[in-house]
Image (cartoon, rainbow, N blue to C red; front, side):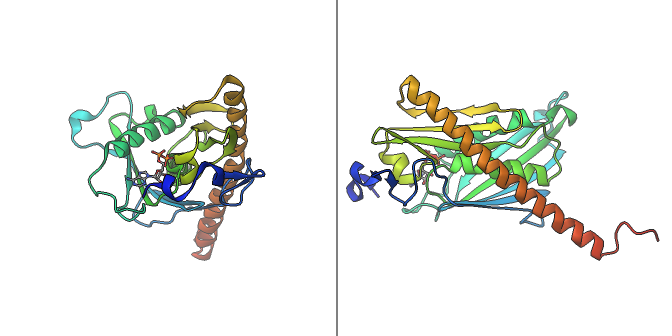
Length: 255
Ligand code: ADP
């Protein structure tokens, strides 16, 4: 559907209130869950506003075909896919150029956090299924994928947390949704390793001047730090549940 026929620029921001009722520096509501799939080595689920995304991680494991294996390091493979029902008009099930591009972008954002060289000749595979999309899926996917990697026990330097900043009617807005993304003037996704404040992704679609860019960057970091707290909380909940299960089974007691 052509959003420009349903909404106009003026609808996006009225007296500092956005089309979904948020303030300009407000994230969408976020729900994070770790360890949601029993068949995967690690998994996570994220809801960020209307985005719903599931991530499954396998590995480190043997790579097939073997000739693609690297003798000095593991390779990271990311597969970002959108379900046919994830957007308003049915999406063609064949992987689109956008999905291939986002798979590469997400891989680039996650790879610096992983000790890939600890696992020569192997692969770590990250499968991302977007069940419902509403803008900012690459960032939400990165946030969830780093949790799924941690859940799989993959050794990491840090988690990776991502958040975008948009520009609508000349005003910077945190975590733009689909309408803001499509009708806005700019969209800047950022991913960081939060403890080190190391940037692993910085993209810009549209235009911002230098002052806007600096402010947008600060807003993105603030957004990431808020999300990072939720990531840690989700991991903690997962491990408390695992520990409880272990204790209930009598684990840890001398036979
Ligand atoms: P991101 O999801 O990271 O913001 P894009 O900027 O490419 O990536 O996409 C913005 C939004 O456009 C998506 O989150 C989704 O809501 C919407 N979108 C993407 N692909 C399609 C599609 N094939 N049909 C309809 N909407 C789409």
